[in-house]
Amino acid sequence: MLSSIDSFAPESLSSLNAEQLRKLARDLIAKVARQDAQITQRDQKIASLDQAISSKDREILYRQAKIDQLTHEMAVLKRWKFGRSRKQLDAAQASLLDETIDADIAAIEQELEDLASAAKADTESRKQPKRAALPAELPCVDMPRAQPGIDLYWVQ
Image (cartoon, rainbow, N blue to C red):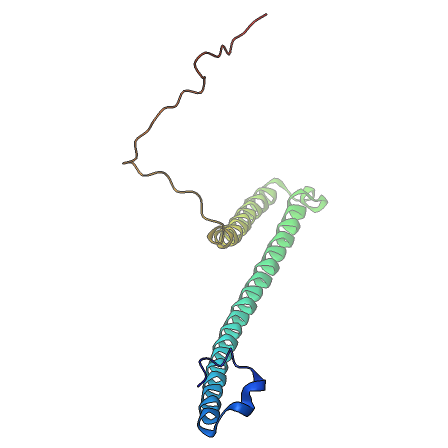
């Protein structure tokens, strides 16, 4: 009888009887079925990981587009605030424009910070874990660094 399919040598087929050949065929069919199941599981896992990657890619593209849009809008607002056309306005209109632009710039900066903090939170969750502190029940032993008989402050 055969002990294992993995240690089977093809040259020994001629020495097997009909019952041993049937058992070998059943074992091989079972092995192929197990491998098919493993392949199917791996394919499903790969598909779910691909879906997660594409989702993250879409999220990154959205965030980058939003950051670009907000940066452009901020540049336009600063041009309005410090540009030549602002000098042509009277004082009341200029102060109203300044208030509106300052509020818009503050809102844009806040939105940019929110986008950056969300991206930072994603990267922080993937960082390697830090070394944990030692348990409090461990005794603290001070070891002197200087060895007896050695004068560290030797002067000529």
